[in-house]
Length: 287
Image 1 (cartoon, helix red, strand yellow):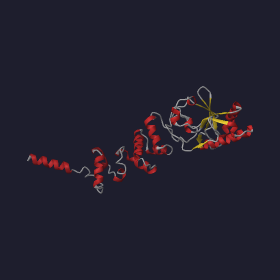
Image 2: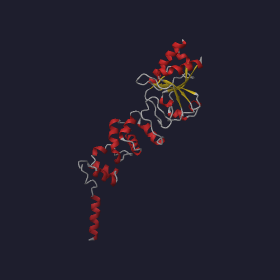
Image 3: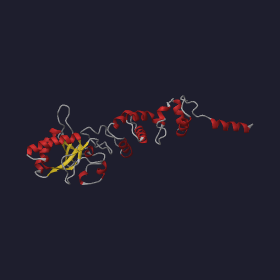
């Protein structure tokens, strides 16, 4: 009798269907096998108790980073920002939920940041708040970060650096610089923005990691140069006179003078013109 009972228990264990209570029994045998192989008992109970439709999680269940508990992120993010690297999308969603972001917050960030930039932030800069809308002008980066963000609207400048190469700024900044340079050329009866020489313009996160005299006050992830709205410069002739003119007139075109904590001029930073046509303060400082 004991032998028969044990045999019956073994038979029941072998043939017990852990998904018997799942309300969506139309799933195929292959799909059932996949669900059972990827979810533990707690996960299986979760999809049963919450009556989660298979179409909400089966597209993601095979990926290594899948978590049944983060579906509220996966589906809207994948619908709005579909990418080929689905596991990257899942990892970013998982990290965002761990950071206690809402889905709406993640959507807002993804309007400007790539998925790999957000993952980089979570891995290496998660101790600081991430700047929302890094495309805005006049951002303060002293207590927040943009991680390894790179602007998507960079354009090459018309004015060379000291090696004859052409650096980049964001398109609106480059356009405003062209207008400022046209005014300077008219004032000084010159060309080429009075023989302007660009010292530093857009500088990537990786470039900022390399320590040199140009980036003493700029930490990678917290530099206005990384935003593509800041330039440092000199002139081949009449340097002091033209620099002073640029500082005085730059505000009319959306630029302010940017100074280091010791009060030394770093360059010009574009902060834009507000809707009333008024420019922003004429001086900015790094702290």
